[in-house]
Image (cartoon, rainbow, N blue to C red; front, side):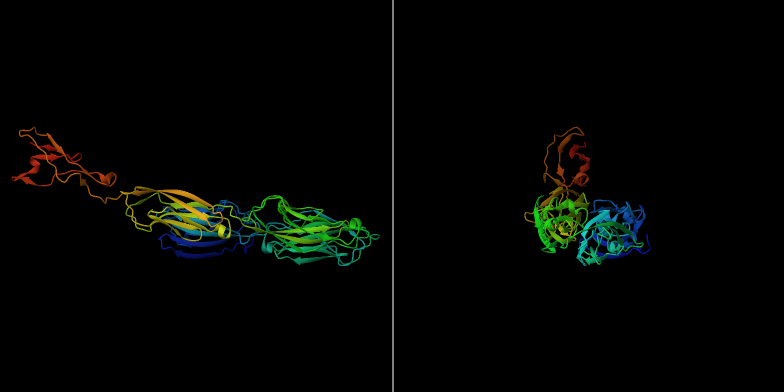
Amino acid sequence: MSDRTMKWQVMLLFFCLSLGSAVGQVTYSIPEEMSKGSLVGNIGQDLGIDVKRLKSGKARIYTEDKADYIELNADRGLLLVKERIDREALCGQTTPCALHLQITLEDPIEFYSVTVEVIDINDNVPTFQKEEMRFRISESAVIGAKFVLERAMDLDVGINAVQGYSLKPTDNFILKLHNQQDGSKNVEMVLQKPLDREAQNHISLTLTATDGGEPKLSGAMRVDISVLDANDNAPVFTKKMYKVTVPETAPKGTILSTVSATDADEGSYGNVLYSIANTLDYVPSIFQISKENGVVALTGSLDYEKAQLYEIHVQASDDGGLTDSCKVIVEVTDTNDNPPSINIMSKTNSVTETSKPGTVVTIFNVQDPDSGENGKVACNIEEHMPFLIKATSKKFFSLVTDSELDRERASEYNITVSCSDEGVPSLSSTVTLTLQISDVNDNAPVFDRSTYEAYIVENNTPGLSIFTVKATDADWKQNARVSYILEDSSVNGVPVSSYVSVSADSGVIHAVR
């Protein structure tokens, strides 16, 4: 691994929400294939979070990606590589390739976005799908006759992908490359010196593909040519490019296009056969072409969220070995086939009834892999609830209190959050959150009567129960516990407490004497 690929870049961007929950963003760049335990970044230092806060806030990582490649060492405030990252397996040909993480803290609730960009290293060799290509070329082939060769495939990207080709020896043929819109090169073998079957009826060439990595890696394929007699016209496609648009829900067997090539020769030399060539391995598993009539049909399943465009390279060959090529561009359109996915990132199980409006109760993330209107999501809750949903960013939402709470009116809320996309028909998902309202001592005891009257016969026995007073408190548990005491007062100059007493727990009035 070179020093160049080991240079990490960190970009910090901080901002705060009006909700009072801290939000921050940090980006790291690391090379793929780092060993387990390697340092990604000092997240505590870069976000300005003390290690003690990471531990007390029970910091944890939430990731939108399926695999768990990054872990948080809260004791040291570091992000570390948890599993070896293969950029090709993670992102394929997509660039840039990145992991998206969120770090959440509790008490108070905070969350931070972390992007880890995975940089490609030159760890894949250019390879050809075939070990050998065979051509049968007539000795009458004219100078400038073109023969399409297979392109090499390299799972790496950028400079580490295939950069050039060479063909040796160059006695009869030279190599000609054509740049394609996707950045690849169309490889053709061009006849530069007439063939003479009587002098040489078999030619062996080596096609080598080289990438631009450091060090450079290469792969090779043999090109075997049998020299034949009299085929002086190559097939010619009526169009060099065919375009078709198909929805991702198209069933297997759907006919996409029909390509056509003609050959001016007669007999077997004018017989044209079609095939898919010069393409990635997965394309033949999704598409097929009828070798006799050039009908291109769908044989696999399409998924707009995985690929929006395919390039199918089609080759027409006659029995004399002459070829021509064209491309079929398949554009996949999105359908609303994914409902929103609601992921709870952090939540509070209870809040006090004195919590101020705007108190954050839950932070959640909503994912919808569809595109355009099909991927736009809005979330809401039932009406007449003292809560509302605020969007903190494109995919993140907060559930906050919207008005004052009163445990005596409602001690628990079951809040159903519903998220719907804007597709037609719309797809939605729901999740129910249970929130307890904890009590504060905000209610005084109240007697069930303002005045009590009782009669007692004189010469009573001391300790006799006279009557019972009753008071209730709308609060809960300890805050609702009522104790009874006699106020200091007197009757004819004698303290009331010398006549009667009250039970502190039950409110029973007893005669003292």
